[in-house]
Image (cartoon, rainbow, N blue to C red; front, side, top):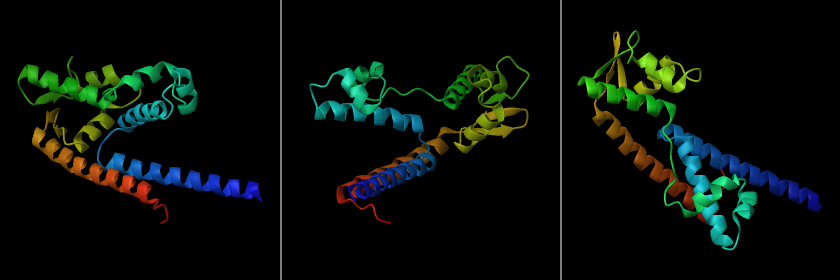
Length: 188
């Protein structure tokens, strides 16, 4: 009988975790933030919460409790902010932007140039992402558009509007999750 209750409770825990993950996945895609950004904050906060709950816990104990590699526990304990790394797409865009600023224009050749989009893509994402997939993502983000044999930087205003919408949306999502947890509203 007790085993049946344990199985039922484990199924409820798994279902709840799945629901949280689904909400966060939808928010990640809807509001254009990286899952890596979320994970870095998650790891930082789980370490801090573990240390707060058990102040005398060692780095190794926190590592065992959280599953986070012990080499990263101490930096998370003292961190004020998560240390975020740019994605490959961000690195490529930053290089494109720097080249355009250096050349004082808004165009970058697609191919056949030592500072072409294709060369930059190979430098940062050779074998893992194609230049076409990178362009499609930068176009979706409102940062580049196709201009014949060139890609053109788009005006930052479009991106600023998307960021404002994302900030409002993710704030609503966070409030909803916090409210649901506080009220234990897990039923559909």
